[in-house]
Image 1 (cartoon, rainbow over the protein chains, first blue to last red):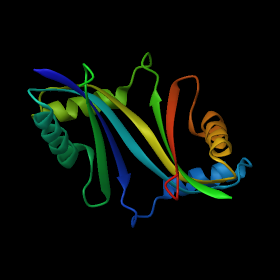
Image 2 (tube, each protein chain N blue to C red; image 1 turned 120 degrees about the vertical axis):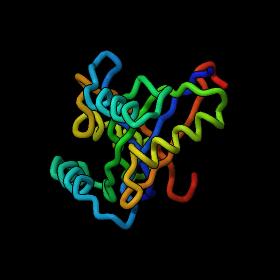
Image 3 (cartoon, chains in turn yellow, cyan; image 1 turned 120 degrees about the horizontal axis):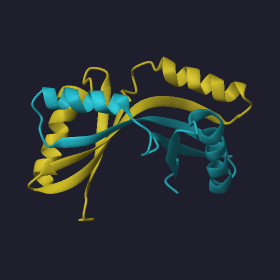
Length: 87
Length: 87
């Protein structure tokens, strides 16, 4: 069994309204930081996966994303998988 | 003025207890996905920055992170900055 570190980023789909992002954008502008716009807020998950190969680990991450971490109706995800030994 | 797209990831520091991460880890395990552990949950922010140079944009992102997006007592952040024209 090898160990992989997975970093998953979940975002609302571009077509979905993001009130949290709007609120943060207004807060940033209200504090005087101009020139920042199009703010979108998402979630990140980082975890260790134990699997026999990188392919198996990828499949595991995708299954968990599709079933638990991401709501496929409103959200999309992308992930990065790195071997613990730097493979 | 050039446009840059910034992607900021905010995590709880490793020494800070992450109850949300623990809850997600238990949910994942409870649904039968074994081999996943060390779950940490963070926030992601993606936004457009208008600045004269990449250095100026970097500085802006760091200021906003330090003052608004990240609580430096408990959290750390990292960011990726890419020019809109692919610089």
